[in-house]
Image (tube, rainbow, N blue to C red; front, side):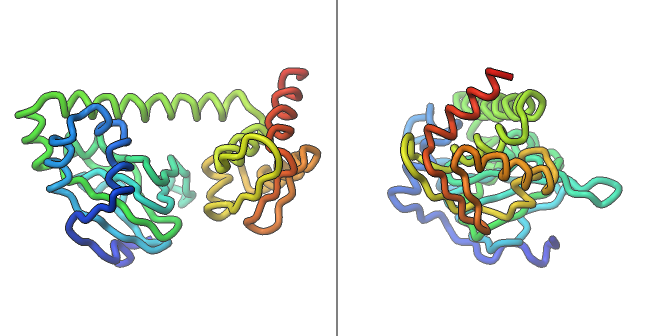
Length: 243
């Protein structure tokens, strides 16, 4: 990923009704009065990216944070040996980089669109001024950062305490709203990235998918058929409890 591949389009804020409802559901905006949210959004822009476009690179100065309106975004670091480690994956309704942008530090990781995506870019120069005028904005950002920390702790727990099949099962269940009966899921991004997000190799991911066949999971390319969602959920739990 190079900066030559960066944002393909940027325009002044023009949110649809659904977009606005989504932005207001983000942790830092949820507790703020509507008029304050409108003031913050007046400083923002919508940016559109294609798959593979870079948002920023590790070490660059953080001048803004982002809210995902559509698509999938990954944060990653590259080791000294050139290996890529996925730090996080974000999608519709999620925000990222608030804390580092607010204090104007360097980004600790690089960021790239893994599908076509639309994001709200929230610049922090004016936002810092607004926080001085209205401290409740700063408290809301602390709440947002705390939520990210909570999610990070959950992910660490998942990596340490759960088997590969359990991780894959929970990932699949997170992609469907179906509670019972059959479900068809289109994997949102390539399996290599899924493996990285779940803290496993591609070989381990393949073995985990194979193990889930006993629970009615069939994988064909990026399409996943689940015979019974509740059977998958209960089967994984039962095996874990029995073990």
